[in-house]
Structure formats: structure tokens, C-alpha cells
Length: 477
Image (cartoon, rainbow, N blue to C red):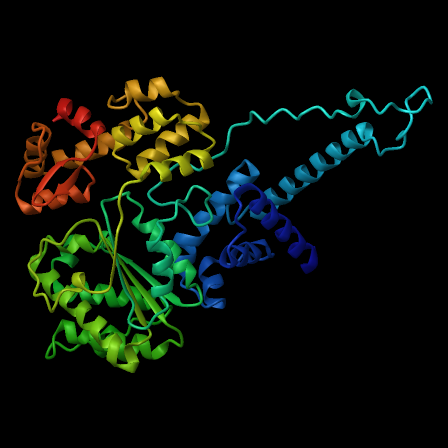
């Protein structure tokens, strides 16, 4: 197959994606598909290196969204290894359907070979009935949706923009000294938003660090944690770690880490670097470590304003809850930069998501669903997914919502298991669901419950975040 053929086929795929979703493939998605289409399959690492991208970003962010989008388009699973064969067969099917449709149209088109005459050879009448074209019956084929996961893939039509924050973030990230703080309970859409901010600046380098991937023995030690951080940054940028060349116990871990970033990382890149720190709330439990680490991040942010060497750095901090670590106001990264507090979906956002999911909800249904799950984005998506697929109906969904037979059972059981692993957290949440009014609990317990999405904060008190949790945990705790 020639290069021109491959380009044409990928162009056809791009157009079909646009026809289906209203959005074309992103430049990076198209680049990845083009590379995987070529013979001699390259690894994600090779593709990233050749095109100056982070391999982890390609593999963990771009690829899953692309293959999910193309699987939905083709109606079968598309992967890196089978994309060319599956999509070529899909294009053949599309061409065949177009040919059949053209044949049917030619047989009935008044502009065809018998135009102007009836089959008897007499002129065709101009009566309204002769000119009427029957309406095409709407398709009853269910809308194919990707199953809801922790984040919404790039390119998915099911993503609901978080404006005005989103457009502002995409502008801010290109500014020297940018610091964006995305805050909200788990599964509220933080990672989905972050992915789109990073994608808007895909000509930059990016490194994504998730503190949930850190071992507890590492996160409990400042020196181990900062070495882990530096090694991960170097690895994602395809640089040798070189830790020992920069680490000096006489000047301490924080200064060693700072010099490593300035003199090694920033000095060896020719473009701005977006450093994303996901689940920074994981550090809160380790008070001494978190104080030192967060004060270092605040120092880095201050450096970006005044020191040329640091102007390449942009920071995105993602946290699941408010900080309950006592930090000096001048040493905290949580009172500077641009804050994005993610909130539950409102009615307009639910309407938009329902339309994109092919689900019709009455005003009463929408109000009931929002009240049931508290506008929780993931749970809204889960409900619409099952309704669109016909695996449940509205009456069954509502009747079984808080049971172990309902569509939310896995979500509820995971929360129950997590609560049962932490006795004090379980006791605190029991206090909340036993009361009809907001209650006060220990600050760290309240913030942990909030990070799980189980409660909402009401000044210095908390209350259960939705009817679903109230019903389920009243019976199971």
C-alpha cells in the first residue's frame, strides 16, 4: 500500500469520526494512527521519541482515547496491533453501504433514466402524490457508548466542557509561571480536564506524576520521595536518571531536587515543560513530608516569575480535597495560581450529556437523577450508559439504585470496602448519615470522606452528598 493510499484511508477515518462525533481526530491522535498504520509496528516509546512527546502521555492518555473512539466507530475492538486491518474492513463496509444506497436511489430517483415518463411511456404527472418522497424512518440502532471509566478519553463526544474554567486554563498554561490547581472529589472529572489542558499545549513537553503510584515506604520519607519524583521526570523525558550526580546530603533533599530540576531537566529541554502532579492529597497523611514537599513546590513557582532558567516550567496540581496540613501562608502552593474547583453536573450539563448519549429524560427524570446521585459526573454517565444500551429501564434503575442488584452496586461496594478498612472513617460517616443536618467531625476524617465524594462540605461541617449514599450506607454500615 502506498503512502498516498494510507493517507487517504486515514483521511476517510478522520471524516467518519467527525461525522459521528462532530469533532475530528486531534493532531496527536492522527499522528499516532498514522504511525501505527505503517508496516513494522513501532512501540509507543519509539513513536513518542521520534515526535518529541512523552511516551507515558502517548501510552496512558492518547492511545486509550484513540482506540476507544475508533472501537466505537467500527463497532468492534480496535487496538494498536489490529487497527489497520479492522479499519480497512470497516471502510469496505462503509463503501458497500454507500454503493447499495446509491443503487436504491438510482432506482427511485426522478432524475434517473426514466425521468419525465411513466413506465407506460406517458408523461409523468405533476401531482403532489407523484412528487412526494416518503420520510426515512429514524434508525433504531442503539447509540454505541464507551463504558464509563475514571476519565473521559480525548476525542470522546461524551466529554462535557468545564467552562469558563477550561478555556481559561488552556490560555493560562501557555503563560510563563503558570500554576493551575484542579480540586474536587474523586471521579469528578479532574483527570479528564487535565488531559485536555495538556492536549491544548501538545507542542510542549509534559510529565504526569501520580502520587497514588508511590509506595508508602517511599512517600513516608522525604529523601526517597524526591528521588522518586526526579527519577520519574527523567524517565518520562527519556533522560538517564543521573540522581547521584546531583544528590548531596550536605545540602539536603529539597535543594538537591531543586538543583536537579534546574541544572539537569530544564537545562536539557528546548521547550516548556508541563509538570502534572496528580493526587497530591496523598501526601497530606504524612505531615512532615508534605510540608517540605509543598514548600519546595511553592519555591519553584516563585522561581518561574523571576529566573530565566525556570520560565520553561508550568505546574498543574490536582487534589481530591482541601489541604488539612498546616502550611505557612508564604510556603503553600495552595493559595497561589489559578484554582479550578470542580463541582457536580448541573441540569444543563446533564441535558447535554443525555442528548449525546441518545437518552431522552423528562424534566422530572432529570431532577430525580440529579438528586439521587448528587449530580456526580461518573454516576450520571453510568446511568445514561445503561439506559442507552437498554440493559435497564428508568423504573428499574430507580427501584434498584441503592441495592446490590442495581447498576451502581460496584461503585457502592468499593466505597463500603474502603470505609470498612478504616474504623475511624467508618464511625465518622455513620455519624453523618444518622443526622438530617450537617455535622462536625474530626477535620482529617471529614476531608477524607470529602475526597471520596461521600460528603459535601458546609463551612466547618459535612453532610452526605446524595440520596444514593444515604440509602445504601444506612443499611450497610
